[in-house]
Image (cartoon, rainbow, N blue to C red; front, side, top):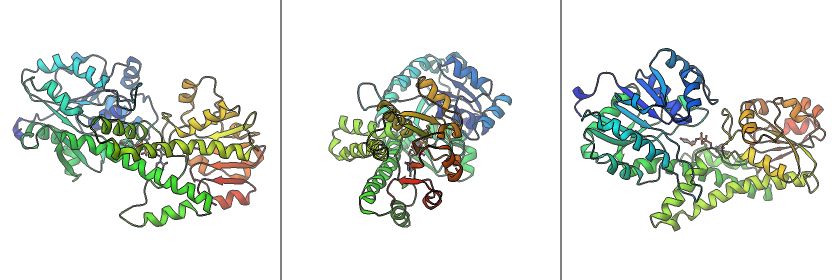
Length: 449
Ligand code: UDX
């Protein structure tokens, strides 16, 4: 599309304002666009409209409030308000299906159903649908077939790589922009509109790559599967360290100095969780099966199994420290979120371990700096404490399972005064072992002597 045909100011929609969509919507408004966020969840829309963030994400509250106050960012549940939108971003969830490992694409299809009459009423005016959700390879091509008959409408797949805890930074300063298009030799409209959306980022020389649909879809799941593989790899090495006396932090440090390997995502511990990595490896296994390449992805089942095994490993370790049984023992769990700086407890290794111990009869007390409400909402009968001191009080065993700064910085001497027995499992290799041992604690760190 020639530059002259790209509207001077763009109106965007973001359909699905969960974690990804809400951050994307606010970030696009921050770039100066008029943005309408749409969701079927009225309560969420009401909160966002008042500038209230439904989740904990550093920097997001200010970003949201600033752009709601400026009037550039509004929210609705009504598709008819999207009539003048030039670019619709699809940011709907693609959760794991109830009946298998694959992704549930029903939210995306419903959104497209609801959007169809809006797109037709544009009467040929250039409009772009840009998918941001993580989808199985082949999805964009299928969706494209649904919209090609509508005059003026194009589809691009524009995956999002944001990390929770760094979502604002990752959206406004991404490592790269990926545009997946139906035909790279005839994608002026897709490239023209996306370049206009991201003009400010392109001025910063953030690399922009134009691929076909399939490559763009695969970039996202490959990246997450690779990260998961790195974590399970170092966790497998960690188990070897435990039986040999090697220190996994030393091994990770030295292999990470080889820049072909790199130091990141080699932190051994209780493994990965959250809304993306576990779901994405399972989605890739499932899709590879459908496409006849399942044997080459058997290793990803092992990556998943190693990761799940880390949770069992900690439960066994807890039993060993408590002379064979956790039944009736008071266990303090520090951390419930799947990682620090988020209140997200989806597939959280910390919460999973806490629940396993609870189901074996332990009196588990769990605390988290920001995720407590989410835990209470999901498990109303679970003992959740707001204060770290009360969590630690009289504990027979402490588990550090999410490496929040306040837990890394705990004073072992003060903590020792509170507990019944000074023994701790450092599930995230976050503590200075000497300091804690000098203060009289028995510390079990995964993969460290
Ligand atoms: C991930 C990807 O990083 C991001 O690019 C993508 O867009 C969405 O999925 P996120 O789910 O926010 O982001 O979390 P991430 O920071 O990747 O951490 C995932 C899990 O791995 C966490 O539970 C974390 O504790 C764990 N982890 C991470 C480790 O156990 N060891 C590490 O070295 C790094």
